[in-house]
Amino acid sequence: MSVPTYDQFIEPLLRFLVEHPEGVAARLAHEQAANALNLTASDCEQLLPSGSQPMYKNRAGWAHDRLKRAGLSSSPRRGFWKPTAEGLAFAKEH
Image 1: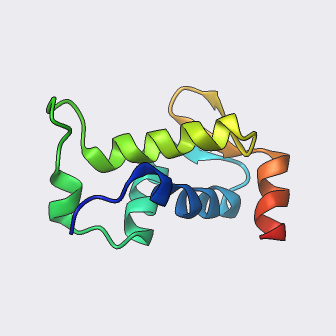
Image 2: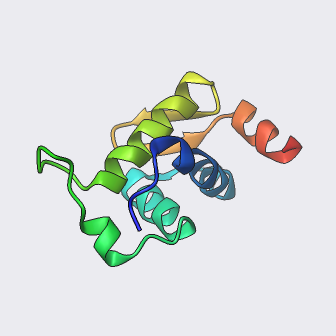
């Protein structure tokens, strides 16, 4: 299996953040999104072509960027992600 595209990380990432409205470490959010997408250990070891970062973490980061742009999550401090009130309401409706 290959690592899903960043847009496929959006839903599991938002669902996880909503389960933790007080916020979580980005590292934990990366791992939980990978688990929700059933990534294998081999999938999680795939690096970006530059070799600088695991591909799944990069894609989860891009997914979080899109959630922030949509106003559904925030990053109140480095390495910490939190759903916004709008994100909580959106998840409840959908």
